[in-house]
Image 1 (tube, helix red, strand yellow):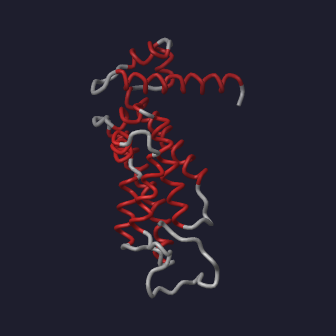
Image 2: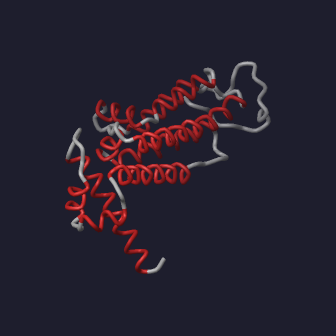
Length: 213
């Protein structure tokens, strides 16, 4: 990337950061591009060179969050690990991302009047559900689930949501929300001995650590 392109990327990022800060500073109220430009210490014309309107700017902010969330999840994914450990990695990745975004993500998700943003939110939620489904389908095939696969997916999807994280962190006093959630989730959906009664275990000849409890 040449210097000019790098400078353009830096300005674009500066605008996105300013937009997120402006959202937090104006809870429930609409933000203006003029206010964002002022917060970014840029001319309004410079902002328009990167984003034609407010919808495009806010959508870009969420797309960036979604991309970073996916990268965080994929960086912690351990394909060969047991489902219990995979779920723990997923909970940790999402909760770390929510913590990093803080009130900025709450402000973004609180927006309701932007169709393009709503579509991006649906897409990242669908991706999260699919990642969890893949892990839990493997657990189901191995006979590790103590409940049905749809119930396990529903529970995992719920507790890895931003809304759940927000409520839990508000209730906990200094406890590690990711650990609390992962422990509770795994205890709820996995058999304590790692085996479904009567299930054919394809890995019976190999030692396997206990699951979930």
